[in-house]
Length: 238
Image 1: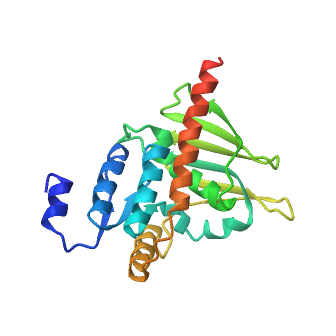
Image 2: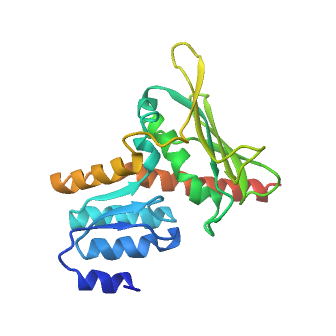
């Protein structure tokens, strides 16, 4: 099929859909799937704006359907224990090509932002300070998130290998008791594979009819949009 609406019309018996399309199309396609009474798993992020994400969460609840965002790395076995520590740095480095037209913040940002939110039980930062790498905010950027408890998280996003390294995803945290700093690479694919776990949990939710709202998917979009707005304010203030 060349058209998602035609596919939905042609296969009314399908109970669930997986949406893996450009970010700008998420809202329209997910909305159409929910209105066709399908459960939906959508590739990160849930939508490109908070308003769109909120509308999808409300629609899923009204239709009594499961809606989940594929935030793959939340299923990584090295990330699971991070709900008990304070993440201090998240480094995400993607391949040089292809580069997404949606920009690096929205393309790679959902993974580290969702991990940050997970490690803080959903607590949002109070301030975002943008930094630049090589002067190109779309290609490489760093943001420091400040929290009300005085702690902060640094997020570094890069297109292509930096400083001679291959693609990398890395999480650094500080033990809340000892204060000791630790870090782990998330580059290697573990067993069970995180994406397979995302799909499994989605299907389990469908079978159990667990229509709990996708709060982490929504909060991730909220932080991304707010971060983008903070950049605009920082630029306008010079």
